[in-house]
Length: 225
Image (cartoon, rainbow, N blue to C red; front, side, top):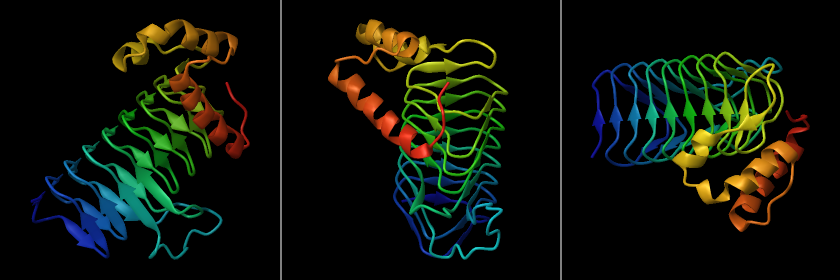
C-alpha cells in the first residue's frame, strides 16, 4: 500500500511498488517505474523532458525513468527523462536533498548523497557512495567514482577517481569519511596508494570498483582530476 497525497498528479504509464510516500503537489509523468519504500516530495517533478539544446522539443513520451528502493527525494527536486540513452535512473538508498537537478540520461547509483541546490548536466554517471556538496555543479558526461566527494560550490568538469576528494585548487586527497562509513578500513593502504600514487590494487573488490569506473571514464571521453 502507498500513501499518495490527494494533490499529487500522476500521468501516463507509472508503476509504483509498495510502502511509498508521495507528498503534496508532486508531479509524475510516465513511463516510469518506482520501487518500494521511497519518500518523494513535496513539489517534486519527475518525468519532464530532458533540457537538450540540440532538440529542445523532442518527443519524450516513450522515454523511461527507473527509481529503485528506499530513496529520499526532497522538495523541488527535478528528475528528467533521457534523450540519448535508454533510461534516466536512480538506484537504491539515494538521498537527493532540496532543489537537486537530475538531468536527462543521468545514472545515479546506490547510496549516493546529493545535497541542496546541486545541478547535474546531461549524461552524468554518479557511482556508488558518492557525495556531492551543497551547490556544486557537475558538467556533461562527468563520471564521479565510487565513494568520491565533491566540495560545496565546486564546478566539476573532469572525472573523479573512486575514493577521491575533489576540492578546487587543492590536490586530490583520500575520502577517509567514506572509507569508514562503508567499511573499507582494512583496505586503506591500497585505497591510498591508488588515489595518491595511481597504484592499482590486487584486492578483488577494489579491482571491481576501479574497473567499473575506468570503463565509464573511457566512454566519457573526458580527462580526470
